[in-house]
Image 1 (tube, chains in turn yellow, orange):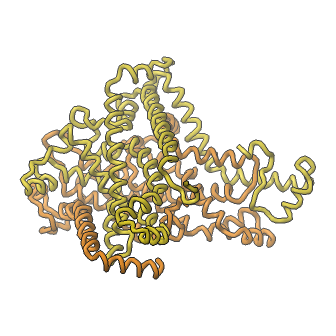
Image 2 (cartoon, chains in turn brown, orange):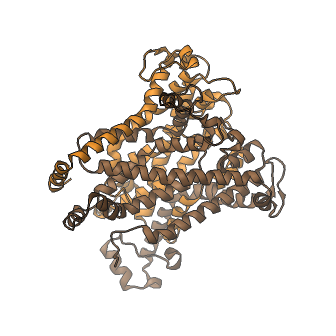
Image 3 (cartoon, chains in turn red, brown):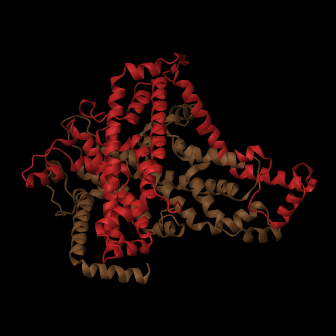
Length: 332
Length: 294
């Protein structure tokens, strides 16, 4: 915004001589040579950023506008689109039980998997943050599953959770537990997807270990002198001090959680699971767009998803004032 | 870690030998649980077809049918071709992403122009746009270009930089002392020369870090190939191998040993990249201290 208001925003990265000239002579009366130099620099700037600018216009800005426009049409992607006003949105909210199912399942998945994996990551990080022999080994082991590509992870879990002779149910049978049919059971298919996301808890753990190690030791010393127990130190010092990292992971985790696709597709072979039990929003958009060729309706769904994500992000950002602690701020 | 802190921790551990034991116990159990899917995977990848069909495998591999790795490449699905396609995608994607993002980042970090801060805000705000909103028009665009069933829709967008990578690189460039560029300019080097000869070499860690991120994303990228690629001989590994695991009819069980061979081929390069690449992530300051948030 600032750049649009003032012709040449002051740049901290410039030579002292330039600052002098700029300060002595106000904007309109710059020397012609300097003005030419500035124009050249601006052109160079635009040349440097041209790859992004071109991609932004062709792959982001125009597609975004056209998908908004398409969401008010009926379009099979071959015939010319028919303008239908708000009817896609009306249908979506009033006459499409599958949308509500997909929304419900997506919320269920995101609301359980994201906080749960953050909690587990925090627990593991607190065990690993203090020096101990073998910490490096444990850290590596916990991190490895997180670098496994989702598709590969989903294929492994599909097999692990195979109903009759899969390793998980075989292990449960050792304890006399009759395991569920997991991916074939409407009640267990989403927990199975959550389980897969918990397996990849390592990425968050690594970030939290770094954050915990960054907490100044004086804080713990002071607390110990005041007689705080380990438990109190953890909840009153460690946790508040790493809330910025928790917050960052919560936001990015939820945004990714709302857009879950690949693992669901692989685990349920591109179906929506038993009784549509694992139907989620992005797979539902995919089905509408690329299986039913209902591009207008799929665009409307995509925009609703976009607004839901924006809404949730806004709520979390608002709430962050209440629970995210930044070291620079002073609290009374 | 300061020695004071280590001494402190040692004292705490002396006091709480029990708590240290609990820590080891918990971490051992968690590690075992997290590693077991991978051990199972290796065990199954080495099992015979019969073992796989009857699910009579054991936890630790008891048979070693290493020929599975040859079978995977010679019969049935063209896994060798999948692998080549994945490598092509990843190589072009990394080169395109690293160079385009570096160019754009240098522009935003070091050059002055009207409209710059506005454009930077636009760039940052694109990070919040979910891909689904762009999906259908992009699909139509690539279809009109005749790019369906080619690798182009997956490769080409990487040449137009990416907001997150530009942001990371810009942060990195602003930490390079300006005096270096100034001195080079006095010596008569132009902007391109400064970028090419001074800034780019100093950006090494962040260039590698972005290459690692790009590799990670594209190696496992599933959604794009699923939409754009129809013929088997053009599929990348992540999509092609998934076909192995898909059951076409309800009663049929997938050839799990081959599926696990496919998973292994997907996983090993990722682990290798992180193993050999993590020092660049550290040097780029992306995994230290406060995880890049301060």
